[in-house]
Length: 101
Image (tube, rainbow, N blue to C red; front, side):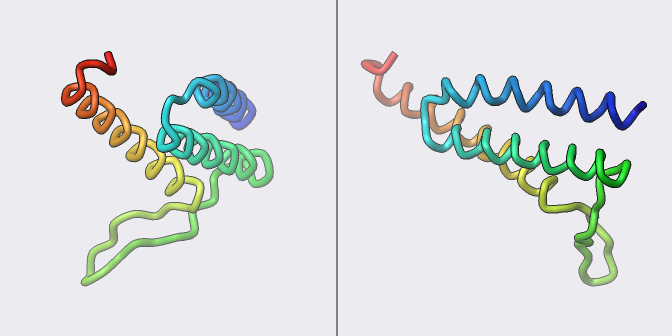
């Protein structure tokens, strides 16, 4: 039942992201939201198919073990980072061009 609850929450988040995507003002925001939604759907597929999210990439170097993740996780993290950058870039453009407000 926990798998189904987590999957339902993730699908609800993806639906909300879809509404946000329709209102995205920049292509950067649209790509970022698509990456987040796609990663979330990928994790839902893993949960429903295997009962858990399958991580298969292990980042390690020089004797240190950092992260274990999958492509869906990477898409979510990169999408969130791109969304933050898009917000920062949009604020700078508003500050430099007051006519856009």
